[in-house]
Image 1 (cartoon, helix red, strand yellow):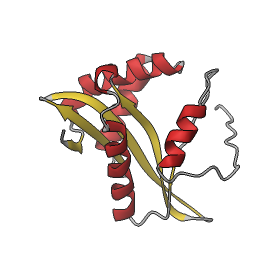
Image 2 (cartoon, rainbow, N blue to C red):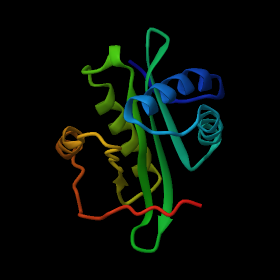
Image 3 (cartoon, rainbow, N blue to C red):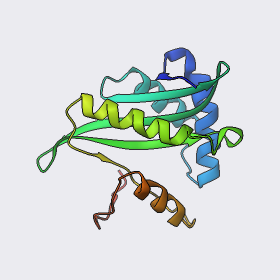
Image 4 (cartoon, rainbow, N blue to C red):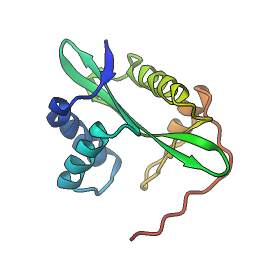
Length: 147
């Protein structure tokens, strides 16, 4: 299944997957905010919205963004990764992770981070999954101050 950068025409399919993803994981971001944020990310040179297709249908996506910090210099974050239920367990997530790693490395990033948010769910399977793919828990905590 080919993986490619998302185009503006992919926004309806991306939005449908994002809405399902956020509902599945208990996030409360509104559909309107998801639509606006996806459009911004697809157009941003500091982001990679990758889409995996099967027979012309988008079945998975990953969003990776870059930033620059004093400690690490250029850094990427794999912010979102979703595979539709009927396409799971076929390697799509792993291929999207590899795509994100290549994209970040090509931009000179020193690392790719991922935030695993429990949202009231057991995420030990996610920690194990990403751990098997080279991500390690450095014991940092992500604290958020809403604005």
